[in-house]
Image 1 (cartoon, helix red, strand yellow):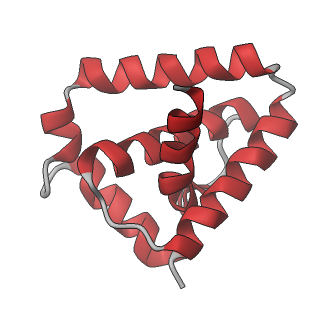
Image 2: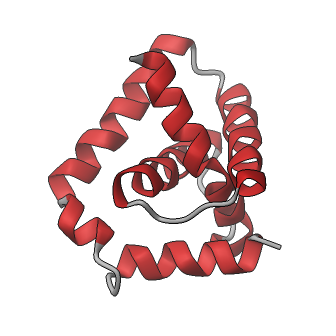
Length: 115
C-alpha cells in the first residue's frame, strides 16, 4: 500500500515543484510538502496529464521538502493521509472538474513549469 501511494506521489510530483515558483514562497517545507502531496494525489485521482520528466521533478521536490521538514516516515505518512482526507472532504468531483479552480491552477502550474 505504501509503495502504491509513493508511486502515485511520484506520478504527480513534478507539478508541485512548479508550485513553489509560481505560487511564491510557502510557509516552510511542511506546507510545501502538503502542496506537493495535493498535486500528486489530484494528478492520480483526476487523471491530470503529467510527463515523465515532470513526475521525476515532482519526486525530487517532494524528497527535498521531506528532508527539509525533518518529518520522520510515520509523520510524513500521517501528513499524506491528512492531505488525502482533506481532498476527499472537499470532494473529488470539485477537485477534478475540468473548469474548476484547482484544475485551472494545476494547468497553470504545469504550463509555467513544464518546460
